[in-house]
Image (spheres, rainbow, N blue to C red):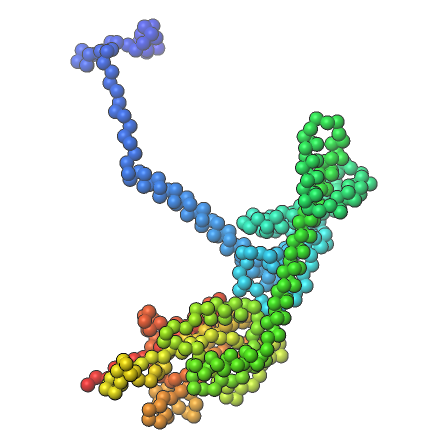
Length: 463
């Protein structure tokens, strides 16, 4: 052992031997460390940023889960519409009618006419392997869902799957109650409502926790069966809400289709007279009356028109039009629209000489804002487009108009099935493609709306 360590043990303390050149030890003096400094302001900012980073990460995960859930529901809708649905697709498709977080633009016109089996029938019609696959799919939806009513729906389906698996493969499940007793249990639980089953569940759990001398096997089996019937009650209540919602939607759809076409035609003519000198065509009987289109139209119309704008609703008949080649495969629809024409004064040299702000010159067309609605276009990979048509062999830049008048041309919008082409007559002047805010050129197709906004170039004459 080290001598200094042996000396410390024998004397009951550290060795006092020291070098002559070292400082003298004084037991009455104590050297203390300085107190820990308070956290600096920069450290506090770092901690705050760390908390916000955690919150951002949580929000990112939540947004990602929401996106994955929405995409899963979209895929299920597509497979149901194309008659290649899996069992989980029918369950997700049924929930869409009461899903408060669902986007209305994901719906299509014929969805209400699709015949989908009830959730309980879907589960009970599967084999053992099918139930295992369905249970895994249901678990995925249940994990991603955040809305309480939707989670209750998926939880009930999971309980029903487990019960059906136990019935098909009793060897892997502990069922110690004979079938006759099981039948009696089902007779007791079948007529009860969801609220009554919940009250009975509480009573059974209390009895199982008590010290009473009871038949444990019977009461546990009763509780298991009660949970299954409770799940069936949840599904029955959900199906009732779905059926009610479908009937409401069908009633609204029939009401919209029964609107007097003469009134709609008169309204269109009134709007057209404000916007252009060209007489509008009569509304055809194949106008798009889907719910998604009506929603888009109402949203755009709610924005109104600004001070220098007017509603532009004058259509033009296309020359030499015939039925499209796909008319036999899809019902031809006429797209709806909400267009605006931009009007203003041109203060050229002549107008400055003959007019002033109190007596302004006539307004002229300075641009257009086209909003054509195509929510149900078949080919989602191809965006609708437009084409300029100049009649009588006139080319771009040429003018056949008389003095004081302007040339006009047709702008034709093309989307493909199930929409027919539509055209408007506009002033034929050079467009300003500047993206500056005051000029506002825009050509895009997003969320079922083709937007084409443009103004004409301003021409400045030098002396």
